[in-house]
Image: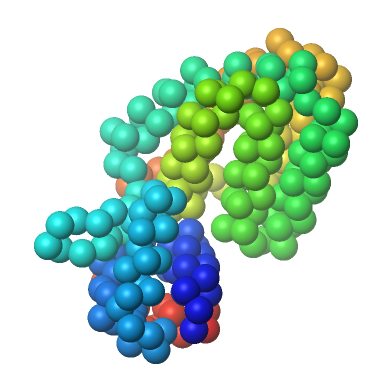
Length: 223
């Protein structure tokens, strides 16, 4: 099996919460499950660490990562400060093709939610937010927010428990993109502020996961 395939499987398994936060990913078991040596597993671990999906602890190994409640508070605090500004800039500078791309992600999100493919819809949500900030034309905002939004995505993958996510998310995202299309920078900024608050309200860190998870059983679902 190729290194890219192994990376995609482990990434998806983590983001689908098949491997919960704190789950140890043992090199030997993964190598056996994928039928490879430990070398490609170690390379994949470095990629997953770069994605903030695992943490590598000296002499202990690789563990699935998710920000703690205290870290999440800091992450959303930074997001609250920066993303509304980036959204307002997007309303000023986004091109027609960039706005069309936002609507494509919005439609993809809507379809996946309708099909109850929650974790896949989160990827579309992440891509929608990234497409907005990337239209801000501010290199530093884009750089900081890419990391923040990625961490937010990880938190939501594990701890988003909103019962009304579909209606709320689609409505709020639609309003955001519409305000950018209509060049309403102030409106876009205010919508972004309220939307981030809404996201935080949908997170419940009291949600529990079952430990341990069989690595082999999880991998077999994807191979």
